[in-house]
Each structure stands twice: as C-alpha cells, then as structure tokens.
Length: 179
Ligand SMILES: [Zn+2]
Image (cartoon, protein in one colour):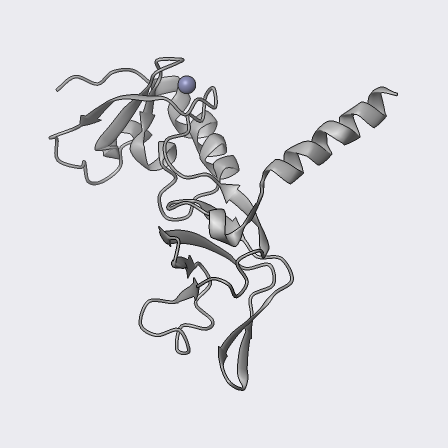
C-alpha cells in the first residue's frame, strides 16, 4: 500500500519535470527524449538523451544550446538547435534543472543578498575552499551563505553535484565573510 503510494508520488514528480518545447523558459536545462532533429533535407542529428540549456525562449524560436559538442561543426557557430512552431512544438522534454538560484542546503529558490569579494584569489596551497570563492549569495530561507557557482550551478553543474560539493567542501565554513 505504502509502496504503491510512493510509486504514484514518484510518478507525479517525474511528470512535473516534463515540459513541451514551446513552454520552455530561458535558463532551464533539459534532456531530450528519443528524438531526431532534421538540419538539412537529408541530414538529421540524433539528439536522444542529450542535454542542453535554453538560451532563448521567444515563442517563435526556442533555442537550446547543447552540452555535448559532437555536432558542433553542423551546428556552427553556437552549437544550438532551434525550434520554431509548429514543428516539434509539442515534443516533450525532461527539465533537469529549472535554472536560477537553488539553495544546496534547503532547496529554497529564494535568494537574498549577493556578496562580491574584492580579495585577490589566493594562490598556492590553501586548505580552505572558501578562499577562492569570490562571489557568494545568501539563501533567504536558511540564511546560509552559498558560493555563487553552486547556487547557480555554473558550468552545467547538476543540482545533485552542487549539493554534494556543498556538503563536502563548503557547508562547514559557511558564514558571512566580511571584507
Ligand atoms: Zn537555504
């Protein structure tokens, strides 16, 4: 019984993370289902399972920058695929990251004050990982200070990895670092 309920909940979460192409928003990161993207009359790219970031969400042209560069010559110069209605506008993709601030501590999407450090990055061996964090942002809910690159998941960092790094490297030393 409980097992069944769990299955239903997991199923719902999975559904919530699916979105049709035309409803995607800028900054969202997505994963393609089984899908072949036609570029020329007789050339198609297999995008199955590939991931990317929505860089333009204009209704007339949803643009997704691919993470993988294996088609970069075909998609020169920006490694992007574009979707204009009505073609593919109802294709269902999986949203793997909604973009924007996400607190790796409590999961909140409410960001607070951003802090830029003016210090020089320390060179050489410094055991404190915070020493090289120049941009930080406060979580509005749990009030923890989070390194910006984790809160915004720069360089295609996954939500899971950001959380992992946070716990492993930064949580212990988290505090407002006045300068
Ligand atoms: Zn938080």
